Length: 132
Image (cartoon, rainbow, N blue to C red; front, top):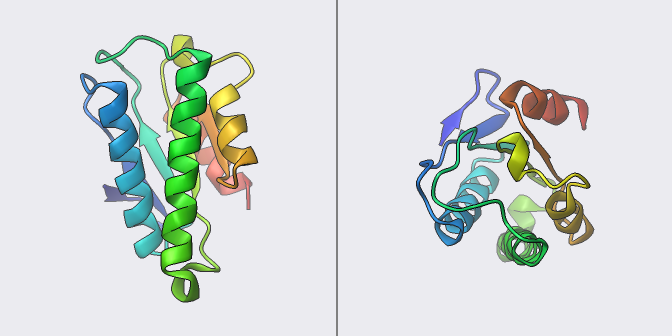
């Protein structure tokens, strides 16, 4: 994971050929690392995806639940140090991988993880900077 120049955001770039399960694990690990580094946000940038087709609604729900629960569990484990640090997650995916209602991001947010999804890294970073 790279850290942006401001030192506030992490940027993770999983390989394009990873499976959906592998990407889920990479995102969970990146969230843990971002929390330990007390970062404000995390960008998971996958502008090209080759390892899996656009997820179904069920797969999006499963991914959102797993990632949000992992983020919450990490916060509970290190509550004293992490209580003030809620990492915001933004994922960059090809346009055809983004559900028109951003259902995965909405589900993750409903489960306590501030999350969004965009087609460009610029939009992702703008959202992180503007969502304070």
